[in-house]
Length: 222
Image (cartoon, rainbow, N blue to C red; front, side):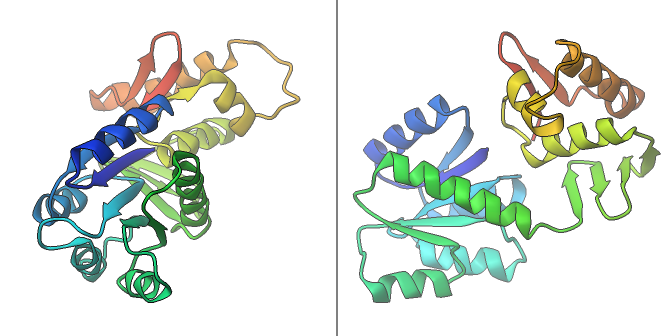
């Protein structure tokens, strides 16, 4: 996942950064509400980890402003105040979940996974990463307005990359998701299909959005 962490406590930011990057996530950091709004408005994030008590505008105001702008990136609020009333205020501001401090990193990552599952389930039929657009209902892909013809398996692989943009995907994870656990075909099938995708969605447009992460797998640039 590509995450935006918003917190003005260096120790908390350092802890989250180490834990999340070890988990294979990429992240950007903001320490105040103004920077958070700018990054969240311009960036493509899978989720926001947003502390309530940040330099103004505070986390609740940031969340409200994002929702007013039509930005529905999942938001996990962090706060030292954990009463029922505080949680209700946070959720009413547009947050998707609420985690009081101090918290367990295991619980934080579990809540992030749950947010992503809910987000994907409720996702639009259209997925977009930059100028690459996938219409799931019409089973159609385009880049820079030009239609890209894909086979069903290429389509499934590209959808997985786009849903997990910015995240390093191992070959095993790709096989499990796009093929299945019982797959017993060629061991290099992922590499072969990545080449097919690059030949169709990257090279004709002069871009290299599907990156090889040496010794690990592949990543679609967010």
